[in-house]
Length: 34
Image 1: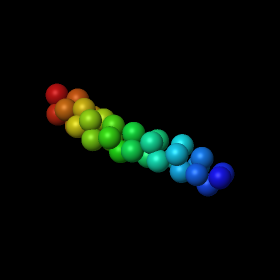
Image 2: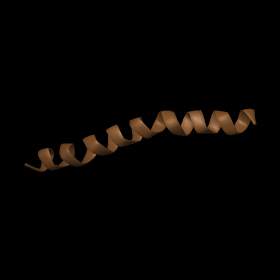
Image 3: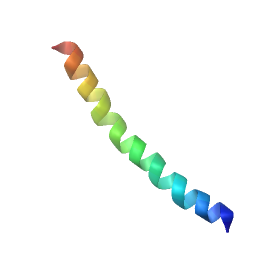
Image 4: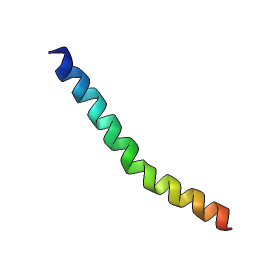
């Protein structure tokens, strides 16, 4: 039961960070180029 709660909490966080990883990197590169 505890494992299920951990998975439900960690999985969305991991997906959220991966989804925002690309925009943040592209934004950083854009600011560096300018």
